[in-house]
Length: 272
Image 1 (cartoon, rainbow, N blue to C red):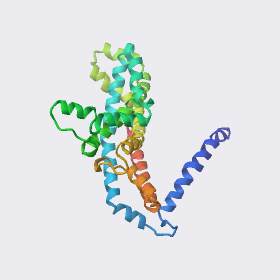
Image 2: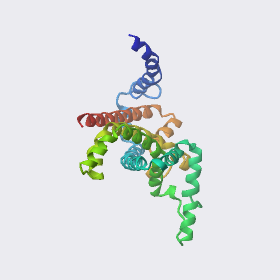
Image 3: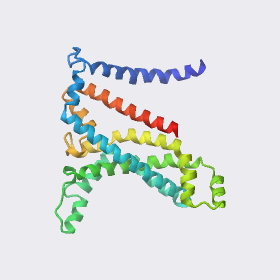
Image 4: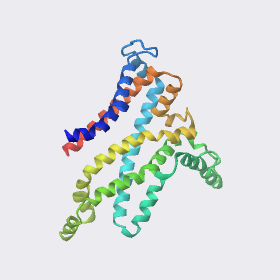
């Protein structure tokens, strides 16, 4: 009973500020803007909307590309930092710098580098090639991927380092005494002990991928190049147009897909 009383304030906050508003969103997904019950009409409208299909595909592609890259790069960086104790403190700070930079400053940096007249186009002009407005080409997708990796790499590195710190050094010493090489040690000792950390990092990275909208919106506006038109752009535009019925239905679908992916990932880790 005492434990429940300690949890009660947090539980009340979750109910009032998360569960009840989401329940209202679910209710609105079955009604028109004026509140009349329309059944599944909003869902049929959403799934027949080309903008929603484009945004959903781009969001799925962005997540499928970014998450594996982020996990691999951050794990490699964490392992290297663990083996470089002298330079580790400086490199850790360098990895965390992107997290401390305000979004507006990040957007200014991308404009200086990628937009027409930016640094990258200056290098292309020096090489004798025509300048390109990267945010209005298919290359905008890879700019957004790079932005996400650059912004979130340090966060994942710290999480990996916390997992690596929990592995006893004696296990590594015993494996080396038995003649195990570095790759065998990594595959047989490091990765099995990092599986709990991998689940947490994968879920957090997946959720953070939905925060990449701010950079894309501030650089390219409401209607960016079609390769980076994400669900967040769609929701923003529908909210501006007060299309609350379609937005509610799309939000419920998105939440259901995210929950299903997280549960599948959790089930896979429980089997491991």
